[in-house]
Every structure is written in C-alpha cells, then in structure tokens.
Image 1 (cartoon, rainbow, N blue to C red):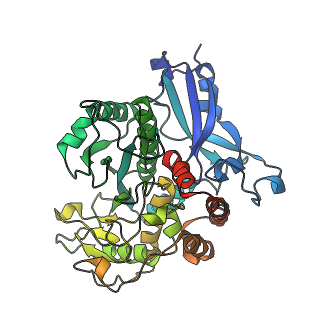
Image 2 (image 1 turned 120 degrees about the vertical axis):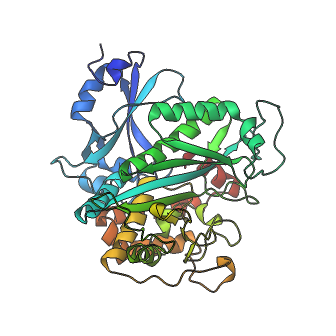
Image 3 (image 1 turned 60 degrees about the vertical axis):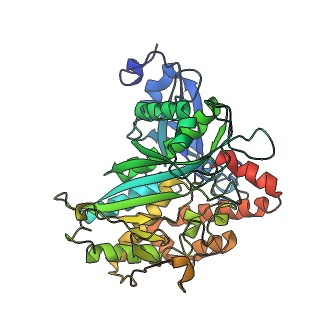
Length: 447
C-alpha cells in the first residue's frame, strides 16, 4: 500500500518512483524504488555518497577528489525539493520523479550541490529586497543517430527527411506534430511552463521558451526537467534529441539564452525607468555580467564540444559586449514595453547545468550592483566585426581561468569551485583521447 496521502495518493497507477539530484554536469543521479516506500523517502529523504554529485561526464569518480577515499566516501542526506513528485511521461509504465538536493549529516547545505549554490545567490538577492524573475530559451536538435552519420529523422507524417534548415517554418514543426503534441502535454503534467516553439536555423533544430518565473530555483528546475523530458520523449518517438552545443559542424549550435529582471518588495521592475534605456541599476547588473564573463566561461561552455559553438558569425556570441536589441552581443537588452525591461544573457550553450548557469548570471549581476560597476557603452552593429574583448577561445583556458578566479569565489562556495575544476580537468584529459566520432557520441545523449 502506498504510504502517501499527497500526489501519489491521487495517482495509484504509479507503482515505481525515482529519487534524483543534479550533479555538476546536470546529470540526474539517483535511485529507483517501489512507490510503497515513497512516504518514507518524502518525509526522511535518502542517502547518497557526497561524491555522487562530483562525478565526471561518464559517471566515474574523480581520481583526486577529496570526497572519495580521503574522507571515506561519506554519505550526504538528500531531501525533497519544493517541487514534490512529478510524472515521468517518457517512460512506458506510470512513474514519478522526486527531485532532491543534498545536505550534510548535521543539516547544513552541501556546498558541492549546484542547486544549493543557486539558493545561496537567491538568498543574497532576498537580503537586498530583490526577487529575480527568470526565463530560459532552450534549443535542441532532433536526430536520427541510428547510423554513424547524424541526420534529421524522417517525418512521421511524410516519411521524408527535411533537406535543410527552415527558420520559423510551420511545416518543420508540423512534420513532427505528434512529438510536439506529446511534449506539450507532458510539460503540463510536469508543471513545466512551455510556451512558444519554433523551428531554428539548424537541420532538425527547434527552440522552446519557458515562461518567466519569480522563483529562480523553479526556473532552473524547469530547464533541468525539460531537458530530461525532451531527450526521453524523443527516444519514445524513435529518434534522439540533443542539447549538445554543436552536433553539426555546418549548422548553428544549441544555445540556452536566459532572460532576467528584478522586482523590489513592491513588485516593481527595478530595471524599468519608463524609457527604452533602463535604469542605472540595470547597467550595473550588465557591467557585472560582462566583468565575470571570462571567469565564468566554463559554466556557460562546460564541455569539449562547447567551444565549437562559440565562433564568429554563428549566431553565438564571441565578443564580451552588450547592446540594445542586438543579437550579436553577449548581453542584450530586448526592446518592447518598458515595464518588461530585462537583460538577456546569450552566452550559454544548451549543454549547461541550468542551476550553475543561472547562479553564475545572477551572481555576476549582483557583483555589478554591489560594486556599482560601470558598463561600457552599448555597441551598435555587428559585434563580430568590432575590436572588442573576446570570450576565452578554448576549453583548457576556460578551466584554468575559472579555477584561479576570485570572482567565482564570490558567487560559488570554494568547495564547488574545487569540485567543478577537478571534474573538468578529468573530462578534458579523457576527452582528448577520443576520436571526433566518439566525442560526438559522448555528448549527444548525455548533455
């Protein structure tokens, strides 16, 4: 008998559950169990080794991590997040997921947990009397990976493959209407606020926007769960879906753009001054984002394939600059009504950990406001053609810059900086030994 009077009590068809937390790579790490024990885990949590949130992209221990042998590979306590149970519509049998986050034995948050890192940043905003309002735009490819050559899947409607990219083409969406219909229904079931879907510039590439949330933790959770859902549901439909930063050399990469504004205690947007220019506080936040951009590049481009996306003329930013309604800039202030004045951070690939990404963006903006940093003049025209500061050009430089950064230690706990550095150094070493085909195979499904 299910010992739970809440969501599971209303869904007696659910016989198995998963409990899982996001590791530093955004991978879901957890357990499967019978739903009859759900009440106990919901009330008391469960236990994993702390090192489970610090595995590499293959799921292997980090060889020199102090979380493993040095400390006896001790356990942490995983407790449910505020979300509670959510269905997993991509699985064959009725199943529910209970998202978790990690605490120490004495109840302190585990500093190596990416969700805890975001919670710390949000608390700093709360102390300032501010609430971040966050939305994400997620790009992904649907792929036939049944052979060595990646291709767009055959349309279930026509049986044909689309010969090329069709930006904003309804027929590209309609070709996979059954998949998108199931996806939107699943988002409703999972309380993921999926809004507009469009076809993008790549072959079989699409983008779905998740609407604004005044809870940054929920916005990150939504993005994390959405990635799990899209990848799982695509397999159910007979093809793959990938948020890999650059699956095709000749087509645009996958980004995850993040929009945010800030509300004061009266519910007013502190970036809105009634004009198109925005407030001084907004420009301080932009200055903070630019100031921390090189140091946080590893968060926005976390894998070996990530930097293949960040090339000039590819619809991904390479220059650290900002502008009004300028999509060639790394930071964009969209047009529209002043009450919706916001910042769009355009650097991240689709392969990021959403909790770390949002923490890095909001944390950098907070540094800009705390230090009253002055933003450079906004650019006009093509950023790619201008002499402007550039993003780190390779993964190794991004790892070293992050590891040495004092700015990152103002945003993230020391332990998380250390753990992520160790994780990425091991991935960098082992990735370099793979063939290009093996590198694609590694990231296609995992990220």
